[in-house]
Length: 284
Image (cartoon, rainbow, N blue to C red):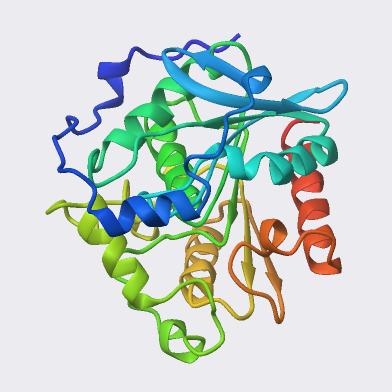
């Protein structure tokens, strides 16, 4: 059984006060299912953080998975069908935390919630991490924080991850006309709400800036039509050049978080199969 250091040993920045969400963001949250009924049978309190838990019939693995939404919206409820697919494919239990959202709770509140749940789970055995979009960035940030204190996850799955708040890669322009769900402006909006003055070059918000030795085995999945394609490739290359274990899965002709947004397609099925293969390799 793992021994995980107490929270102060993680040396995270202190939680800061934010400000109320504007009305337009509250409406976006509602439209994105933020007020959908929470299935009570899936709710579990883990170290004081409310989570949803879905599982295969006889799970042999655990994945802690973070939903997307630009750190400012989204709810695990909307991710339940997708997480259920992942759980079955991986023969796993998938835990989806209700982490705190910006601007009410700017960085590092979401990371504190992630660490709190991870510390509890990792004390019971090895854990895989995963996430999509901003949740992919959060999973990567947690992987960095955990590796720095000698308690890395078994592996990390990043689906269409947000890895650079600088939004500097050329694919923001090259794929801007094809990506229907994401853009440079979206990253800038997320940065204003989530960072609130914090440096965008901190690896705990922009994992692209990490020192590669701080990262566990990784599977990165990205669509060929995404504006995030370039930074996903750059991150995979950075890990590979540092002799880290990394697999890059590029699905041509698909957009942001396609395994969830386009279920049942060949591309989505291939992505979920890749996650299952990676999970089996990390946790035989």
